[in-house]
Length: 605
Ligand code: ASP
Image (cartoon, rainbow, N blue to C red; front, side, top):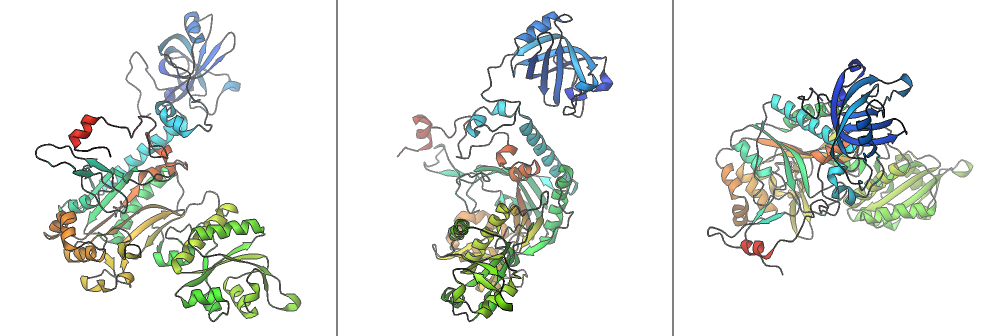
């Protein structure tokens, strides 16, 4: 606590202020009964409030009324007490409490509210069913770890505001009731009431991000914007993703990639430093998307451990083994990981094969490297050993720097599939063999993503980031309208910040030229009429002098959970939804009555 409370009938000090220096003085404090120990004579109570826990002592002789009242106290009752601060005997000092050197010898005690027996203990951090915790969130929030995480969240947002304000960013709000923004997820829809000549069946969409509004703010001359803003994506929730989440959203005009990187590094660098989260000081390394995929099989590479992917196209060119030959002839690749010296039973190799298949691979080749006999080259113990020549086995071994005992995992498939399967295997091996050094954190920028991915299902190109991202030529230079002829070869001016294999945030330099923006809509199958209907307000704004601009957004929930050392992002949010997407606290989503539906022009089907 930064300052003492205004003295009133409940308190004249925070518990955190009560240390040995206050011994002998009077204090009044209030809070919840955390624990009570009745020693027959003396009663000890741990009193808890936001700033800490204080031991109260009630003596049956010196304060008989207060002692009698304390007899009936139960966990989570709310009390206010007055008394004298006393030093604890050295053997009773509690080093785990900020006020552990003292106790309050109570002279009077008033019960302000009784508590029923809590459905789960507040004073232990044991596992409790998530639904039960969320249902009784006001109790759950009293628990120390949640108090700490929510307070940390406040400090993180304050730091962000401080650093951005010092850099002349303005915090500006954007609407929640708006039109759909294509960020790639399903929209949350809000039916509009039938009123004032408005026809029935019209909907607002809750924003998936303030993307278009922040671009309009740049066109509107604000130069530097940020917002810590709620966004909504109607996707199935998972442990690490929620339908309703908070984003730090930033946009800058007359800016290019380097400006966004430098600003981000200043903001997050300060956040990490103040939270005591050990990452390398900025500038943070950069890796192109192509390199991330080639080396780590992922656009969110976890670089804290090795097991990098190696391409075997060269040592296996001309191989007579049909699986490899067919893959290479069909535009595919043969790539591998040297998993190191491991002895894995068949059942575990089968589990790894299943994992590769779940990521689309047709199969997984495994091989254990064996010492060659009589001075000969190495051999393999592998179902495919007999299909490869001794030269191929030797050449693959050299590429993979294989030694006897090493386990090699090989995938022959289309490049995307091979990357996904080996990327997943790499993470699984790291988990299984505990390969991530304790306490290590790696941050890096992944840059130069492909601009488009072809959707075979829809038979058209899709923007990889979002369609407002500016394209780049294959050489990484800003693209002009004339460079867009070969969409598959284009890169984009987008970037992601990756921490320990998870995306912290991402953004891009935008299209500030209307002709390029229109062309991109066309490439992703939005014809000019549709573009005008859906994004006319952006296209119109782009015609009146839009500055070059770009920005980025970060998921606050995950960032805070990470800084707080919690795996579950719900631990960083005061009132999260359950994994199912429902809210056990309020019972949302809930039915509405017929009158409300009528007003909205809706009918149940
Ligand atoms: N609008 C993007 C998102 O929400 C971020 C950005 O491009 O700034 O992911």
